Image (cartoon, rainbow, N blue to C red; front, side, top):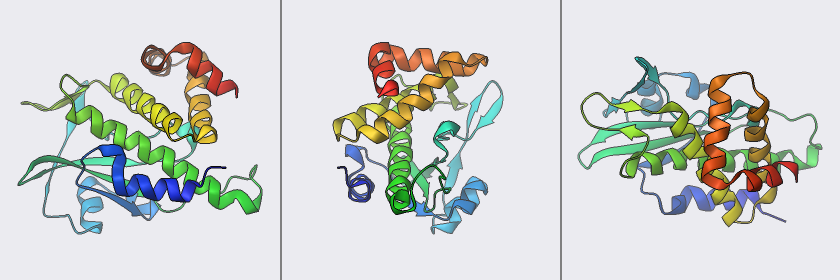
Length: 207
């Protein structure tokens, strides 16, 4: 059985090899504040935040698929070392009535693990060449591509660390988008399938 608390803490510490400024586990209420307030809450208020645009609108990158019932957030900051990523993960998770009380803590750490893997996927995307985030001039993002990449990254990570319940939970959330009437969700599903394989996603979602 996976020790989700240990796996989460290891991901906080080692970040799957991704170099980010920091990972911060915070009160969930802070996630609903603006980026400057979030940074100030962890002593980083002096840094300038960077905003990405999609179709002329601002994009708060890092929102986990709502079907998983947890949000994380990534904020880009300008430091003396260049553009760096600050990740925020909520310390508490909504109570899941279908989960027995004795497993609520494991469920909580599992969801936080999924969220952090997703945010690290965004960081990986931002840092790679020819990714979905464009850093020159007016900073823009391919929204569907960014969310698909982060979800695929999280699935591959969860598969690598042998966390099947977490992997399958995320896979089911993504697979539900295949029957969505919303163009964004259907395109997101299609993009994830192209990255990890439709058969793998369907198999994990059905497990």
